[in-house]
Amino acid sequence: MVKCSKIEFLAAVASTHVRDGENVFGGTGLPLLASLLAKETHAPHANLISEAGFIDARPRNVPLSVADSRFYYGCSASIGLIETLGFILQAGRVDVGFLGAAQIDEYGNLNTTYIGSFDKPKIKLPGSGGGNDIASSAKRLIIIMTHEKRKFVKKLDYFTSPGHLEGPGSRKKWSMVGGGPSVVITDKCQFDFDPKTLKIRLMSVHPGFTVKDILDDVMFDVIVPDRVPTTKEPTQEQIDIMHRLDPNGIYLAKGGE
Image 1 (cartoon, one colour):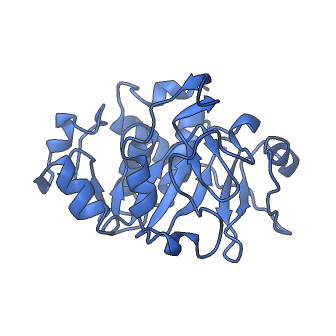
Image 2 (image 1 turned 120 degrees about the vertical axis):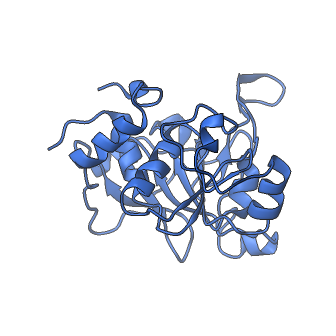
């Protein structure tokens, strides 16, 4: 077993869902680290796209924002926000997008706006930003979030970004270009979505956790297959690559032990 932090584990797991040759909206932070790791390993032809307009980005180490000049290094083009969101993302040319969330429901719909009531919210969050665009238009969506019961809810406090809406046929009804969420990666497990009902389904459990641990921290019913595998752990090579990409611990240092 290779010793790794939570961030290293999550980045390595997320990277496995990026396929070679795909157009990837990776953002910054953990999604960017996962995308860069994929590009350095099994997906060398993945095309990283920054929201600010950097196309086929090849940063030598991790940028701090979607407009960081580090994205300039080796990129094929630098356009703009409107062109990126309009001509590429909303035209259905992004294969996979990454998002986080404060709340998620059983169909993968997301809340990143506020917690509590509209009149007196307990917590105000950043809102949509480009999240709704990514959730609506990317061919598939990877969601990364911490696994807490308060986050996996029956009803969102605010509906910010669409998952599979109300189930089969919902996205087509609203003429959405993208296919919706394909996987949810937490610090305890991975979920995917049942192809018939489009409800969340347990995909794998991380080492050190049980199926019961997962279900105890979810407020809705989760589809559980007869056999639930253990999530594959990162390799030493993956960890070494991540530290080369983030030598100053901009993102890795947030992971703890």
